[in-house]
Length: 372
Ligand SMILES: Cc1ncc(COP(=O)(O)O)c(C=O)c1O
Image 1 (cartoon, rainbow, N blue to C red):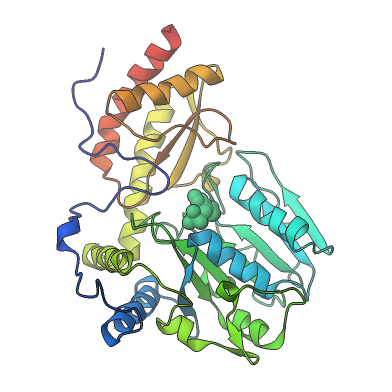
Image 2: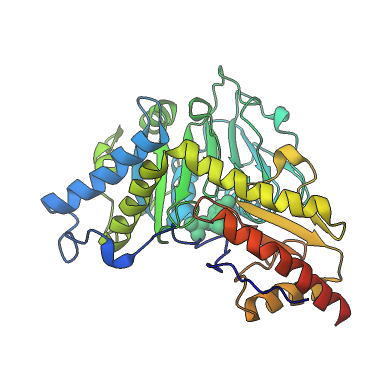
């Protein structure tokens, strides 16, 4: 039987993700719109983005936060192009985005001293193989496979190499061991439901030391350059962006950060996301036709939750299409390169009650797709 109740909010995309509960675009503080980002007020809100991010996330002293061009991809590539080269590199990849960084490192930067550790969709490579004397590049949460790194125990406190972590769908939703991460990147449109286009680049002291002691042999475009005369351009990490950001997106991000603070900080955004995952766990437990793509429970993402269903690929796709047409859940088909199935965003902006209302619809859509 077709369920009677629909979720109040039908947005379950894994990026851009749902806006926060209570979001109202007309309530944004738009005082800087139409002003230069280099004006006093412009610079001041951009500086707030850096300092409030560090404070809300609880970053250790000495960690710098910068707003950079080109979303998370821009932030990751800025790090790879600026930092890699002097040491061997260990790359861990288990889904589409991690594979992309591997391509950057081996085919674009053409580094040859690279060890590659990969796994199929649903699994993690053996992270314990990371050599602490090498630079390590990995994704914290594989958004397209729903497999996350369960903890940072495998990262040595005595490492001499850098850890470069694409954490775009993890920051604000998962506990991150900041001291073990030398470079962390994310973008605003994931867990916070912010707007796309801006990358966040967090540098630990060891990454800064590398930047100031090493010059890559390849050319660096202006939007990747973080040093001048061998010194870090500190301004980038104090709101003096390399080029022009959207002040509208900046206002939107500060609104999202204020929401995080209001509901109880990152501990609460993590809890919200975990409670959302628990709704899906309960449902999967009770139905034998649906499974997590992630093989290990500890590696299950609590943001981009990927599920496989006991249907041929075209029927699984039809299931997602049906839920979209019914106005129940938008954008929940698996990522194009991933095994067919569903991907349901469970980040902090998603309400648990909406997910509960979605569950009977999954059962209904499965029945429809099976019979079709
Ligand atoms: C793990 C991961 N890395 C990188 C990206 C690319 O992010 P952006 O579009 O912010 O550059 C995404 C986007 O979904 C992602 O999930």
